[in-house]
Length: 183
Image 1 (cartoon, rainbow, N blue to C red):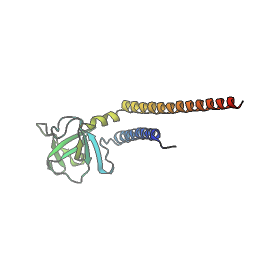
Image 2: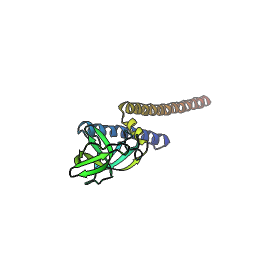
Image 3: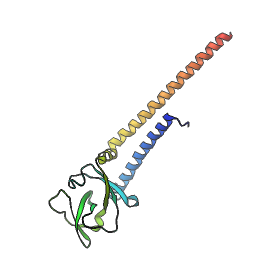
Image 4: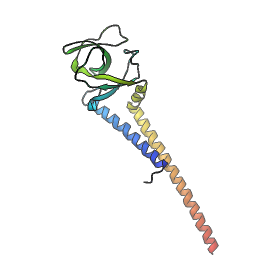
């Protein structure tokens, strides 16, 4: 394969499509098979803030990064799994194996959770990028993205084919003219 601008763009499109499909398969397997709502390969994960309970610290649609820790302290913002939901709240007290959390925007603390329910501490965030992440994780969006990717790839190859056919016709015309000159 010759590496020109078109082929590099095609390769990028295919890589992007493969990445989106791969990430989605990973998250589907991690959440459906293991029941883990926040997969944490290598002790690091990400999640999307789904409510305003941590305003103004974190807002709905923020993409957060989570790091597993061996121990946690009061005032740290953590992510914990509560059934099939993940919750992002601040630790307000720790009593042995039990932790009490509360959202910064909430007036009352949450019910106590076990330390084992904590997925990790929030170590960073990117505002509003979570909306894009949720869009990419949506099966309909994935199908649409892959469909658009194939459409643009096909359009690109069709254009190349048309250009080659035009070049071939021009060569045939040149050969025809040369033959006429010879005879």
